[in-house]
Image 1 (cartoon, rainbow, N blue to C red):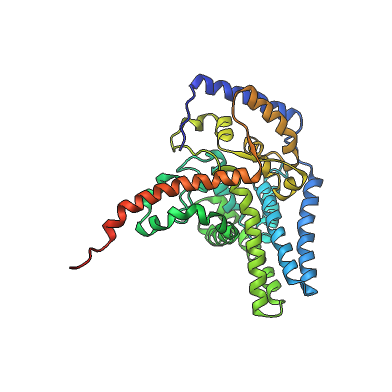
Image 2: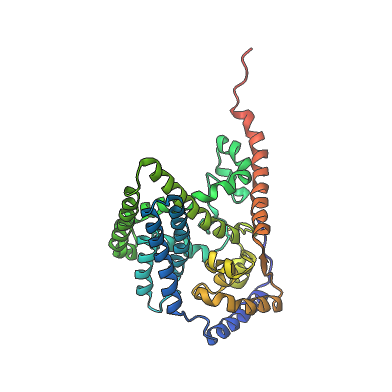
Length: 363
């Protein structure tokens, strides 16, 4: 947990400076999407899936499963962009596109993604607000979370930094389950927008599982079906997770009432780390290697993030703010180090509470 100290005057000045940058970015046309780019990216994923079908038909089951895993990951970036309203100017068109690439092709609920992800952007790495930090009972991202851990959890969490990486492939399965749970109750939601969109998502998500089950049905036997499902889903999960866990878990977290919430550019720059870009990484990471730029301008299309990066770096330097960008393994080691520090606290707590739950030996 970190503390943020900045006077109101300094915070207001930074906000004004950022507003000038935002206007400059808009004047340069960097908030405008190139629809041909998204047509190409959509067709890429569809043809990747069709390629997996073709290889499956000819008996190349493992290669087919790998292609499906890659498609799952690449579709994740498209639903992310659709729910950020990056693709179309019309919000309803973005919603319809998100039902295609999200619910139907990917199996992820577009509305469920929005509900959690929007809060993540508004309160990045703020404990008690950012739901992405709440990984209990499997992981404690900050020591404060250990207060709700029972004696059994306190005996497991001291090893969380050791099993963290092995858990990454299961992220997709977790999101699939969450999507099914969310969509199945949308029609009874308190919020009108979810009730109005419930049928769209329930139909498209049902169709997703229909074609996935049909694909598995055409495999020759149960063993091959299990192998195909496990390889495609876990590979897709790892390819998603190694990206989305890099940018924020490796940096500082802030208290629920931290004043950093009042200074938008500081909130994003202090809680976000970029991955060093390259043509391959830009493709594999779906532009989320420019995570700082994405958080500062969440509706900016992916293809413009690399263009705004030099402007953001220059602005950060001029305003004496951090701009974190590293290679993958540097960021990964920072993630492990943060989980290890909380694990050490869990170990100390476990040693204190363990005697209370140990029965004394009878004499």
